[in-house]
Amino acid sequence: MLDELLQTIRSHMEIEDAWQKDLRFHIMGRILRPQKENIRLLKEKIEQQRLLPLFTHKSGKDHISILPFYPRHEKPNYWLSGGLFIATVLSTLFVGAYHRLGRMPASPVDFLAGAAFSFSIMAILTSHELGHYFAARKYGVRSSLPYFLPIPHPLLGTFGAIMRIKSLLPSRRSLLAIGMAGPICGFVVAVPLTVVGLFLSRTHSVGEGAAGLRLGEPLLFFLLGKLAHPTVPPGFDIFLHPMAYAGWLGLLVTAMNLMPIGQLDGGHVAFAVLGRKRWALIPVMVVVLILLAGKGFYQWIIWLVLATALSLREPVIQDRITRLSWKETALALVPLCLFILAFTPVPFSLF
Figure 1 (tube, helix red, strand yellow):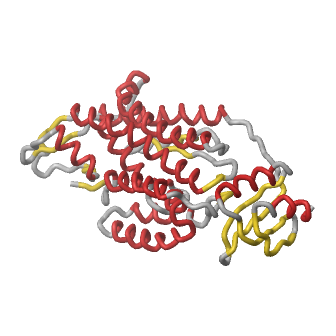
Figure 2 (tube, rainbow, N blue to C red; figure 1 turned 120 degrees about the horizontal axis):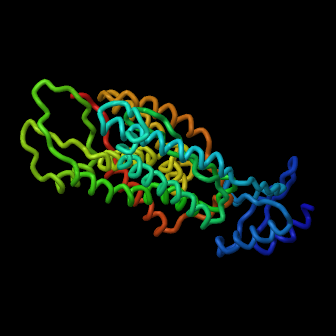
Figure 3 (cartoon, rainbow, N blue to C red; figure 1 turned 135 degrees about the horizontal axis):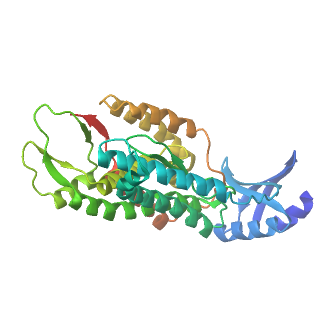
């Protein structure tokens, strides 16, 4: 078997060493130029033999690890995905109605008061997840349907949604595209909803000695707020319409997802661009989040623990040798700009 593989590979690679360990074949050497094209041809020829090649670069040499290919085809769980979606619609209706009415909803009709918030936040989250889903489909990556996470928290209504990648990522390019697609799609939907919501929002007197919850202002939200309400009299503040609050929440979720840690979208973008060098970003983010927690928003510590735990697992990429082009690398600046526009150091504070 190994001899047959070597005959297949020799026309595309200068082989220096080859061996078999357990069920894997390993070939070391130098893949011929043009490297990207030869990797594509090697992938096709090896997979025709019902084997799965993984390409990486080790100790200055190209390395192909070849293992048996056992395809798994899981049927989409429409019932679970659909059920969680409906539950999240209900939980966001509950939160929207609670804020709109100023009390717990007591009847089915009361839940309609939360429609503006529920529609807006679900539109943002759904577009985010569908961005990931269709980008994965474009690159031939199998994934689950989105699984929304309902929670009747009075400020949120949902923890967002997750998707499972069920097959190898073919390249760094695919990882970059899939990681970017979600935040960009969610951002594109969040901005117009935020604009409409801010124009529907009203300014009211805060009142001396009044207590309440103040939302931090991301840069984009601040600029859009100035557009909708150029002047706010002293002692007054903007009380957000549910659509504006949903837009604000969408920006917060986008920024948190774009942190360059672990299995977050930002972590995938960082891995696509930097490879294993992205580990250098983790201590930087640890320090930053600890400093932000010191400013009063202690929940950053919880996010730090979760995000760091997720950093222990790397994306499995079939071709780690082919690097991004300069144009693809430049595209990684887009999520960085979105992060700058959407991030707020202290999301919630009391006044």
